Image (cartoon, rainbow, N blue to C red; front, side, top):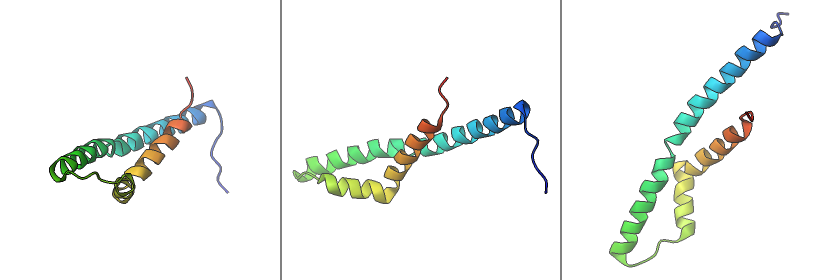
Length: 85
């Protein structure tokens, strides 16, 4: 059975890999955040044109369907995993 060598050098390499992956994940998940702004703008436009309010529950379901809610939760988990400097 092969084992990885342990030691400070391996820990540094491992932390570097985690930091790199975390940065890539944050960048990708961050692309969802502007969608919320665009969606809110669209909601305001529809409300202004129709004179009717869109229910919060409907907006929440749309965010869920677009995956924005999952992206927000993933960003929170990534932020919680960051070491405190």
